[in-house]
Length: 426
Image (tube, rainbow, N blue to C red; front, side):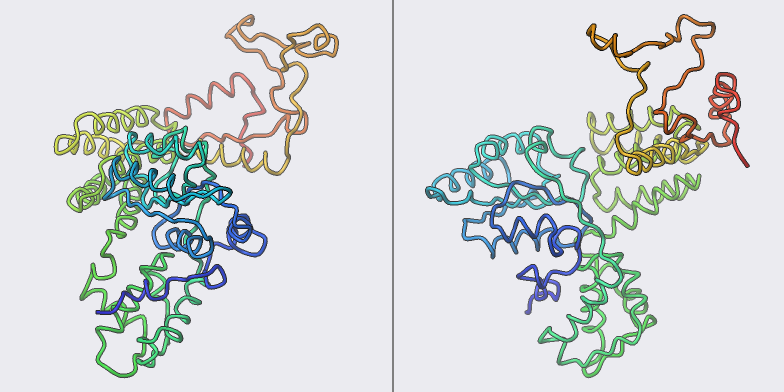
């Protein structure tokens, strides 16, 4: 039995690598690091099928140093310690540190990550981790602080088309089939920016078509996938589609749909922490100030999952799911912070107004630091108007209230305090 197409086409050099130009394109940070052969510890964060493992294997081929691989799914603390011991014995004077690649590092427990920390700190190993989950949630802070974080993106349309052409023109097995890519819309749509999924779908369509030439159309791809709905998703990657449907059902205020998609995840063996974490994000992103209690309840559900586990945790998740879906919705805080970040990137480090600066020394007082600052608690209603933004942004607005009873109360208070500054312009 031959290797899967995705494995047969796995690149061996950066020149063959498709996508992630911001990391491995000419002059990009990872390309420079790999070509210089001076690798520091880093973590690759991105969705499935975008080249995390491939990058690690390219480094293994490029560098003349021992390369160890662990899977967080099958490895325990003992396996980590065994690899570290081997790494210590295999390192020679002035040789680069052995590389330890850990796939799905987000599945490592705190104790497993703690067992890595000393070796990474001392340079016994250079750590390369790969994760589909946000490392700030899943990787302990001491380990994360010793690693650079590189974010990989879903592949663009041009990347996927390039990969398809490479597959049908260079793969020894596919070349024999005389494949004609008449339409690619369905292939791209079902792959969702995932190279491995794309190649799995292509292989499925070709293998399920009688021998001879293969004319690929959107209709053919859709027909084959309907007959084999899970054939292209053997590693559970469909959970990204289902979690998207789950979050959009909450955002769209449909508790029945949200419960259905959550049940699909539960029955599919999804990590309950993954579900709970997505609800915490939804509570702050989609419900926000329309119902601040939603974030409290989502956090409580997350804590409950951590404390009691399955199967009872499903009840807490269901409670939070229904509450979030039926809550009023607002994304004003989400939009406000993105607007503020955009302004900071465009305007740089604007000076803090003098009256807002602390004046712990005599010189600072003489320079006017803190001069003119009004202490709000000394005024009626614990408020008095004064400028808090830099001079260049003195009247700038980031937060705009949306129509929900809770948020309107906040807006009315701002109008009472600031008056015209908070009037919404039509």
